[in-house]
Image 1 (cartoon, rainbow, N blue to C red):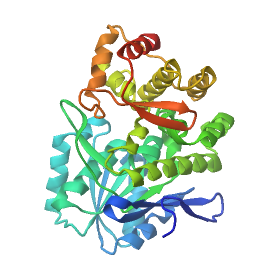
Image 2 (spheres, rainbow, N blue to C red):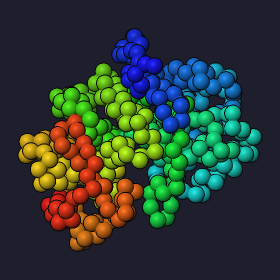
Image 3 (cartoon, rainbow, N blue to C red):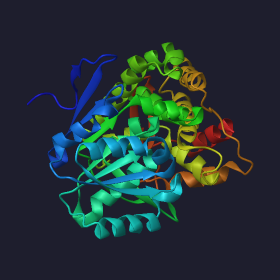
Length: 380
């Protein structure tokens, strides 16, 4: 069998190359493609027709994305003969609640959708999570396609099969692992993002370099101007590398019982920081950026990396305009206690994702509480 989860081919186009990544999930014996390209969205209907022979499509999107792209996307699908039902949810985390989940089920049933029809998620991570969980649970599973429109969704939430909605007790506590049939990534979507939203996606992308690819880190260091100026070759390259890294990890550990935890580098502190500031002060990427600096500092204090490597982590995050410290007026003990709400906690022990070199991460369950508190204090 051919080596799994590698870039299979590069297809020539008029402008830049189109990248195609084959994702092969061992546990489900499921194979699907991630296709990345400049204006690949123009081929949306044809690419969907290759993996779906029906006509009924349930398009899940939010109000902002609908206003920007809804007319074009629905026109492409209708012109190709698809019968579209559109479900529009409010923008933001509020859409990942039980009310909008139920409304989605109600509309699917009212429009006579069956398990051999198709759901398309058009939007950022919230839309992808909600649509994916709808797909995972409606009639015990209906196929779905991810069309992520934010960088955070393109390099993180659309790849790997995690779907979820929020519970009042916390984010993403109700969910399922459910893989899509196809992921279509068009970097042109990124041109309508705010600078802050672009940077939050870059945080997750940088994370993939820290845990698995020193060459990606060098490319990011050398090409920040091109990336912020939406150079398509540069964007496609970094998205491609990021998706390959994540898909390789997911293939080996879909359900996060081991190696997949490496993808949570920076997230232990990041999630705690989001929670104690009630998700108002920092978006996900910003919190993860602070968390990556914290995890690198723990790695340095434990003698796993040298000062030069720690400084590089901090400087790369600064180059991309992400925070490397946090503001919080209360005692750091509250931040420390929130660490234990993390889903990686095992037997009341924190599982830290740390660095043993740039591009090499590992799991450590034996980190001194005092080191953690010192780092949290130092990050303020």
